[in-house]
Picture: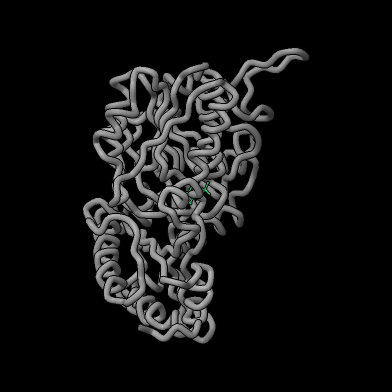
Length: 409
Ligand SMILES: Cc1ncc(COP(=O)(O)O)c(C=O)c1O
């Protein structure tokens, strides 16, 4: 591992079960650099107060940190206005906000909602709820044998009846980079709105929301070096304006009388209750780290790693790799199985080598069923991973079947 990068991530610098920790679960959550930890500590040491509420200096300082982060995020994703950036707890909350505020109010009986079969439950269950409550139809874009969404699928499924399309830019299971620009254009051509789940893309590649022209884009801070508990909803102003609030209470109001309430302007209308200023401080430091590192470099490192991992794992007998091997269409996420060994057993055996991978359905049960598997193992990479990590993964994997008495061949 690049010593300089490794020094930034103290969590990686530890032994697990007598081996160096090899962290390959960044699609679940990333490790945090020292600069993020310091920013959070500094906030709690010297600026902690409830934002937006106090007329005193400390509260104004907290407000400034929070609002500065909004500007930093706006610039990082190429949005037009601060009021189009709403802070949430995470991607899940952002998608629920859209589903409950937009979906429950603007989707009607017989309308069609289109998502892909590769969606994380966060971008699937809320749309099932909307479809059930409103009598709408939930349709799926299915994948071809390589795990890609074919052009014809987009053309055929998004029709005049479609009112909302919501897809992930990068699959958290297969790592597939979906053709979201085409999907957004097709959605708009039939008058539908387009939502992009960028939980697995914004941390790993340059994403410009204005160029994409999506109506909503959502992502989580904790998957991009920031702490847990802060996420982002980007929405076009005109849509956010016409949507009712999602959470009601303190901070999101303008006037409250005994029987009625008017709401605060954007984005505060959607930020009910005390907000996560410490999280925002960490998020701004995370974005700074990524910008200084360079998003192109992040993407190049991951591409190199996934390329190397595909080659390495393909050499091992009894390993089944899922998804495309075309690294132009794949981010740093690799799903695989070891024949005859349950993924949970694989993950447990790898843990004894210090290797942390994810095993299970990855919050994508419909995709698992579509792929005709119960579960997979998943290795996911970030800017702090190296080829040496993959060598250790490959060595441990080559041993896995032997542990269970199969012999290595
Ligand atoms: C593609 C995708 N969408 C949504 C989520 C949900 O993110 P969170 O748990 O931060 O809300 C994840 C998390 O793994 C994800 O990978």
